[in-house]
Image (tube, rainbow, N blue to C red; front, side, top):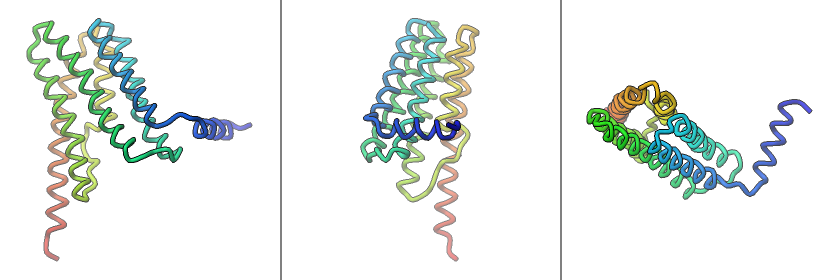
Length: 193
């Protein structure tokens, strides 16, 4: 059996199983909660690994939904809702860590990162409600996950705060990129011929 045939066989078995996209989404949430608990214990590498694996689940649930045909409108809603909770809960515990360290600037950066992350998703959802595709911007969910994961994994090297600063800055820039993109598209659509 070729590697492609083996992959197809495994994929078909997975599709035929009772695994649902919602189960993958909830597993991602649980792993991110575990990551947050590990942050409170200052077990940075384990926290980073739990966050990475939880975030991979967030990537897989949508793909599995499309591939298996098991997706539902509620599942899509649940997926995007849990994505926001996961990022927020980990950043909130990181902010608590910085508060413990009396690093008020880093606490503020965590708040900006959470708010900007929520706004990145909101601007896309609102734009799409207006009929404008809005996937532009440098800090997509995948980029934000990589930055936060790197910060957690390298926290013992004092790189968590710089990662949060980068995350807050890039997420804010992405919100602005999306606002200007939607404005441009809507102004072009409204322009007389």
